[in-house]
Length: 621
Image 1 (tube, one colour):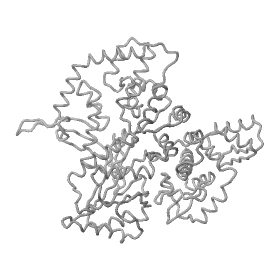
Image 2 (cartoon, one colour; image 1 turned 60 degrees about the horizontal axis):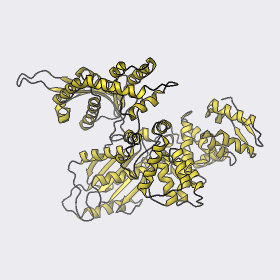
Image 3 (spheres, rainbow, N blue to C red; image 1 turned 120 degrees about the vertical axis):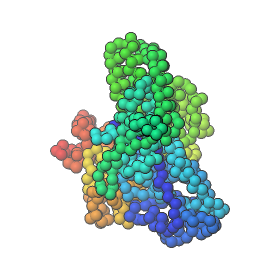
Image 4 (cartoon, rainbow, N blue to C red; image 1 turned 180 degrees about the horizontal axis):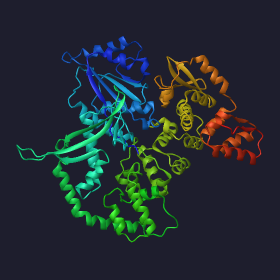
């Protein structure tokens, strides 16, 4: 199982030359893309752009390093969630939290690495001649980054996309860079906090848990001079050495007291002693709570994930150290006891997203929810079953009330029945009411949104161009997601997209995607790393002529929409199209990208229905 360090850290540097940093940031080899700017005229002329920054920096004679350069990188795990709009918004909010409000800046996205990242160039001198203070900049940056990561629910990797992974066979943690002391301390503190929250009653149990994360607390040899023992934290981890191109294993030793008051040895021991005193009471109380919650007769066994969420929403955490002892003391049936014990042993197998929000909804404590147009929420089928329709309905009503938006009841019902997330709800409101609300374009459920627009009888949307852009983006994302299940070959990807109406062209050595002649932007914008300029398997033999030939050969006006339906597994809708007289020919290439069950289902559906069109399928891969 993989875990990420839930912290975004920006690499920050101060410099003297605006031209130097702009030449790097706007280098075409980096597949750069300017997202936004303030106080400067965007131009391809780097000299002109640098001079705009330089002129304003002259307003302060005392500043020697007017260039402020930050870099934010996003974890690979969030590739499917992020888009340019969201990245730009995060960049601006980051600047705001850093106190950068009246300064010139430029936000540029780079697509040349496996991890999406942005560069922010700022003039430390404001238009009023004031200079941005750089005191405690890293600490402020870490606080701002952590707030943004929590707010947007993203795992934003440290520095250049350095994600931390847990449970390697050699050593528990692997960094893709050599971490500095600050990053190590942050991770150690996070793990110790997690350990303390589990209420261990013995030092041995606590240390055993910490060792799963490569951390061990030990007492160093006594000093002869002061006769005192030093409490040390040993942290064993691995990192990838880019220069030597190999993984190295290191153990760093850090003085426990240097982490802060709540992490001192005495504080940890006091916490353990309190837990020991309360252990018996906690076990008994938890046993009673479990019995009350699960004593009702059941017709069938509850699924593990359902049971975990049910316990959590009721305030019972299976990760508590005394959970196993509490289960053993209950008078529940053997089968449910066994399931609970197995659930506790499968530590960290399940988690509940937006846990605090869902607990408040479950307990009908809506007054504790801080409604905000930027809040994140999504509900799975398990969430819907446990929270109940009435509670979810009240949540949606209160959210709309907070936005001061009134929607027809039919649209409210669709949003509720389809358990629409914040992106879809905000997008629907934006298009119907013209209200500016944040949402991730790639995360919008376009099918639900389309039904809402149909019910509203609104012939023209507030931003029809944006709607078409989202439709195109969804086509690309669905196609790429399905393609990734079966292949990693670049040639096949270009053909696969062509069959779905998405054309690939080269611009300045970069792959761009086109839908019906409209430029959708860089392929890497959709996190299609195989088409990145520095992708490992990328071929340099492509020209626009060869790409155009591929598109003409494989694109079919009568079939590309059927391929899009195939990516969405909408077999019945393909059947409707065949009834209307359309034909669908699937060759060996297509069959490679289909599950056998989907293929047989499509064939069976065609054979049992009356169709005017034709279906031809080649089952030999």
